[in-house]
Image 1 (cartoon, helix red, strand yellow):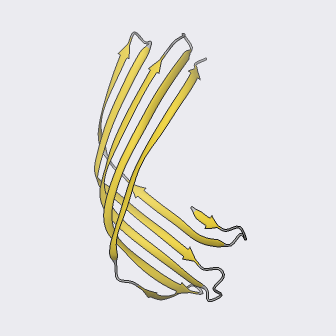
Image 2: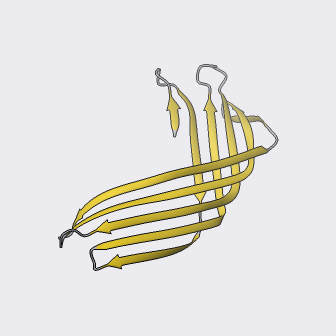
Image 3: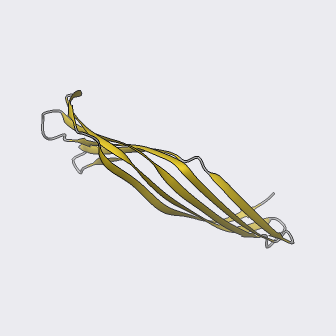
Length: 144
């Protein structure tokens, strides 16, 4: 992700890498091959997030960039629900939702560069990464 202003000057970028290995349980209910319901639950206590936030200062003229690098660990919960209805031999209507709740803690260090050369850095400071989001899908399928 990056930010560019109206004069096409780039002021910043953000990158994040998530690692979420998890264990899960799932169940499925099928009724007369017409309706189905799925439920999945996952949990991870091994979540790792590495992120990098780069602040660029294109109008200062001194080549200064500030890069913040974070490394955190924590947990995540994952829930998934899905249901479907086969209303005709070849047609299937389905609706699903996934919820993810992630929370990690660790450290962040800021590095200051001038014209690409490291000029200094800060002591590590506490850093948190949290994320909660829903993904919802609705689909209509035709099977040939």
